[in-house]
Image (tube, rainbow, N blue to C red; front, side, top):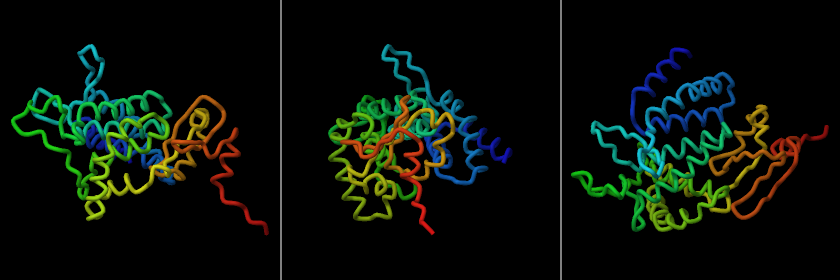
Length: 276
């Protein structure tokens, strides 16, 4: 409703926290998977009206020569220390938004943020809650990232899910190799008490061979021909767009299906018609 739309916009503008990025990802979920047009349109309007505001509010251009922007965290202090959870949820929101917008800049930002996370927060097979460059910047110790996600979405599990998914379309093998030991630890712990590790189970349940990359023409998105296919693709599918006319579905090793037309693509996801 217009009233809900106005209230949501106000909340997003006035709150400074990493859950804003989660809201963007949740809205993308609605756009991709909801089959009720009115709800999908409302989610699209919210995304359109809030995405730019969120970026202006939470992303601060770098004043250094490296050109890297930083995320403004929710804090009462003037100095903003980079926090692990902020960057993970930001990376997810950018990659999710790419899947419905086709804008390459979102994908590039998301992938660069994943690399930044491993550079800034990873040390000796451990992820830390704040940047390792800021180990001694606070009076309290820089602790390891919590792994439980019973009452909230665990950022570390979300990170592993993103890296495994986007390895199919980008060379993230170095990040995957760095993740081997912490992923094994998380796997063992989550299997001991699955109720405490919902996001971990979702991120770790599939073998590497189950992840897929889907490459489709950019025109399908521009001409609104691809929307009905979104519900076919779960979190293990990385949707990519290109300027070519062909499409293909690939693992991280090889391509399994390919075609040159929307009609061929449609046949794969349409149930066969039984003859009378």
